[in-house]
Image 1: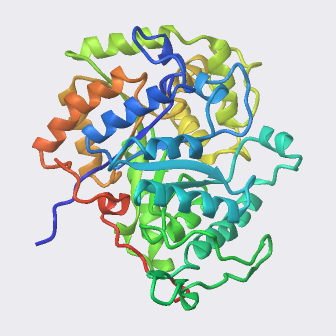
Image 2 (image 1 turned 180 degrees about the horizontal axis):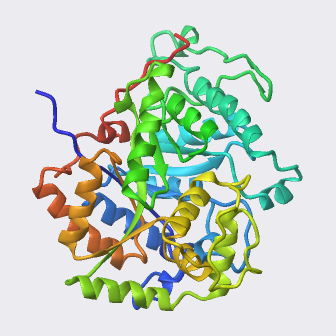
Length: 435
């Protein structure tokens, strides 16, 4: 019998909390440069049977940014350390397709997949921030050009993962043959942007291929995700818009010969819990009291791709603002909400300060569980990327108070069904396309 549909859950890890001032909450972790903090978050995630933990990245910094954006470790290095102290939870990290080489990324995530026993996930992003170009001595490509590069980049990475077939490492003591050369091939890729010989000096991954994560919401981003992604992170503020976006992505998968169930759509959500609705809202209000126009405006300007500090805080957000050449997902969701609810710039910078533009849900554990169930069952998503306001306390509250409710309702697993991330996502292990 087919298994009933169940949620997938990830956790977006920022050591100082997803709220821009979450580190100011009593007892909150103070640094994203403390391995013990991230190890504790990973232990909580495994206790909650989460599919994966996710580390984003940024390739430039500004002291006025979110604390975990301004001071952080390189994420793949961090996940390699976590691979030694975790057993089941997936390990996802961002690596840019604009400011990397496919060979390097393919090798890094193949290595992480081996180190973790099959739990690696690559978040393929095009890097929206123009300041990154200044650190790499390059000119930042335009939005659509970045996606043209990304299309080829992802294909090269996946091709390199396929250069080794299963069973290539034979270790035959009788003949002295260590590797079967018939099961290792070069990629010999020559494209518009990249020339890559291959193969990698890393054998076939435990998962066959690491999981590919993406978050694009523009037309090129949706096409790339529909063709290549296993998990898609989305930015949402409204149930109807989330349902429309979910359908838009799933419906275009057929043109690439894929079934809609081959992608899990996980919108980001910041839950704030209280024993009563009033207590939860008071918590959120207290967090918002830590926000100041300086740090929130830096974040809002980044999300909207333009400096918005010159606008009067109590003026309505104008309805003729164009989508930027940076991130369409965040800008689109935030501006749509601002226009729909006639928000001022002060309202919008509070939104950016709360969860960096993601959706916020405040209420009792039952109310939050009800809302997540509604979104899941109405086909707005396949689960959620949880963004705790601070760590570890807010994450522990969700795992201890909301996850058991979802489990009792049959909406979420009570235990892992395997050791690899593909097992958690219900995805088959692919064979090499080169053999």
